[in-house]
Amino acid sequence: MPRLLHTGQVIIDLVMAVDKLPQPGGDVLAQSARFEAGGGFNVMAAAQRNGLSVVYLGRHGTGRFGDLAREAMNAQGIRIGIADRAGRDTGLCVAVTDASAERSFISYIGAEGELTVQDLASVPAEAGDYVYVSGYSLLHVGKAQALVDWVLALPGGIKVVFDPGPLVEAPDAPLMQALLPRIDVWTSNRVEALRFTGALDIGEALDRLAVHLPTEVLTVVRDGPQGCWFSQRGEHRHVPGFKVEAVDSNGAGDAHAGVFVAGLAQGLSAGEAGRRANAAAALAVTRWGPATSPGAAEVDAFISKTYGA
Image 1 (cartoon, helix red, strand yellow):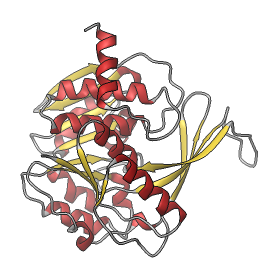
Image 2 (cartoon, rainbow, N blue to C red; image 1 turned 45 degrees about the vertical axis):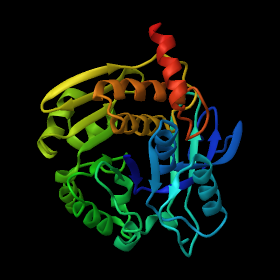
Image 3 (cartoon, rainbow, N blue to C red; image 1 turned 60 degrees about the horizontal axis):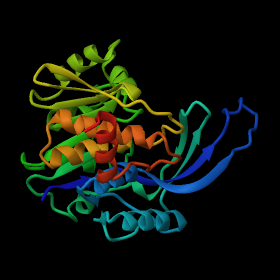
């Protein structure tokens, strides 16, 4: 059975809700605050809850945050591929959501920012598996080169999913140039796609991404409540979203990505996987917190209710 091998970073989010962010030098009171596993955990939890077996191929630390990360993964049935704990703790992200449901992040990288080829070899990838690569990983000098070298050595029967994230802004960096020809599935939001390509709209971004990526790559670009677009072999298609009342957008894109990959791994078409991913993201934004993806049964019920089928 296919698996998702996630090579990104599980960190701990300090999740806070405020009416608005403070001005520089100012102060505001939060309505709530709690610690939650976040980062790559969000994608993994979404995939696992939707029927795809997941292995975390990243580092985890020694300390209170490492303990929280492992506890959260174990609770979801996510296998921790690298058994040894690092010599320092897992990192932390302050995730602040304002009244508009928009979120802002400040991150500190810990043990998850380091990785070796030997670490990655802890769980051999097998034909049919999906390997998830986060753009954040390319920014960590303690893991980036080892990760790219390992990915480039993977057999062709293993599909590589790439999520650029908000900090990979262009295709020019050497590691990005090396990785681009090996990508099988690209998943990003609209802002990330426009920034990466310099395009003015999603259609143009899809065309420009096709120049950088292999011919057969499946490109998925999320467009918030409008749903998502996907493109393959020069054909673009829009999959409509679902109308909901959003309270927190934190983790919605991760829910979309995890559910989308789970759908592909189960043999769904890109359109059907996209519809399920749109439904999961819509439900996720109605809940507070980073890892709020629904499970498969809830996604099914939501789609059935919406379409009356």
